[in-house]
Image (tube, rainbow, N blue to C red; front, top):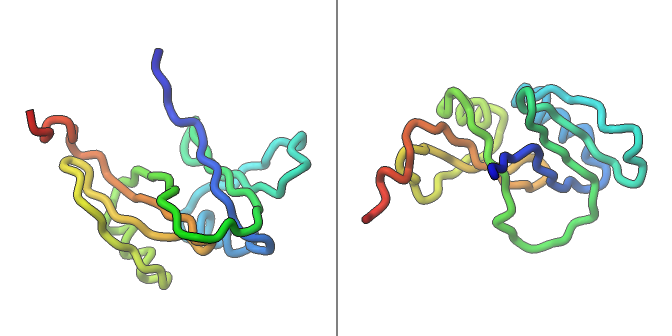
Length: 129
């Protein structure tokens, strides 16, 4: 059996819908799609990542504290994405490299950590035997 990621859900603080849309739609260019009308107990914004994958950002009171919770977006042009974020006033940072997967991290305006990567090679080919 195989599994694939269909969506990721991350929180946003109350009152942050406008800045969330500005970041994900206006800055990153994701298409906002309507959430199902049956979802009535949570304020959620849905974005289409591609033909089958989605990002759901729901309103939630802050849990406080640091977290390694993040999701990863594969992008065609990693450096152009970094420049776009920097030009918009965000501060991307690097972490330990993964062979075959150049990457960097950045927080959205709600403090959610995002990993941006390009898959250029199989990282397993670089594992110690």
